[in-house]
Length: 348
Image (cartoon, rainbow, N blue to C red; front, top):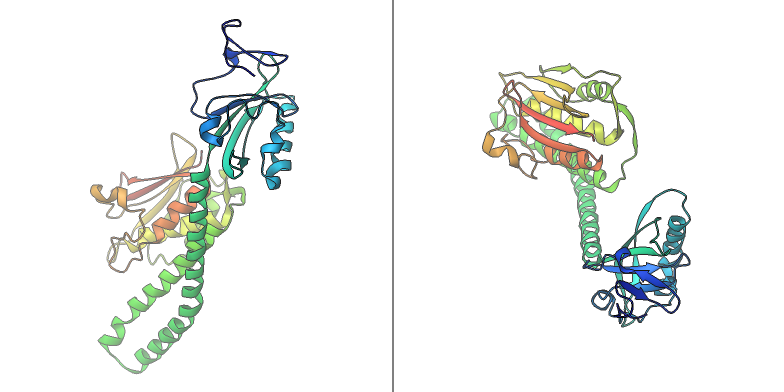
């Protein structure tokens, strides 16, 4: 294949075909390739030298499958054939390992559509994702280490902590002591931290399994299993309103929002927590009529370790943020008209 020539302005010539250049976006920093319906390469942009260390024409005439890692070959080619044979317009993006000039492989992502050029070729847009894959592997390793740490905390600390709480209870029954009383809350806080850490790591390890769920029904259920003292729940959202959600993640979202509202508005103040629909978009909110969030701290409340309560763990709202994201939703934090905190969950 030759580059654009003076004899055929505005065209790229192959041995037996002429490809109009207007069909090829030549100014992309990604690698742009033209494949026929059998997956044979007919053209590649100059960026092939930077991305794959091949000359621009070196892979022309080569079946694309010869350039794929053996473990990826069948999967990628099947995806390509499904696209080009589709009767409807579809766009497919797929990650795989592509051969480089030196014999090594690089992780790339290729995108193509079922709509060919005017001359019957399929445009493949390929970019290097090796850095993204590296970061993903690091995140997976970090999550695995966190899981191992959580298992240690849960198994190796839970039992002795339960023993300590039990002995403390017996001692307080037998002796009246301010020192013994002062030990109750620190031990309870340790127990909550273990539970929340375990919840967080389990949520990270699982894949969301979405089903239709009634927000109103789950709000009432989550309230019933949360220590809410004398606070009150108001549910203003229609019980018939359902959203696609992982049930376990949804329950943890609601339980942690309820717990946060109660714990951060201490006695003698009791709060009313309201669950209602958003007005301008699909979703719901959880709001309380307590003290609210100082304006300069709104951006910080979802961070790990942040807590306005002396005995708070700083993990509960971080769990909410991660689980909302895992459901494919979006969380925003503000103050309610009643003066308390308001957490809005947009489900679209």
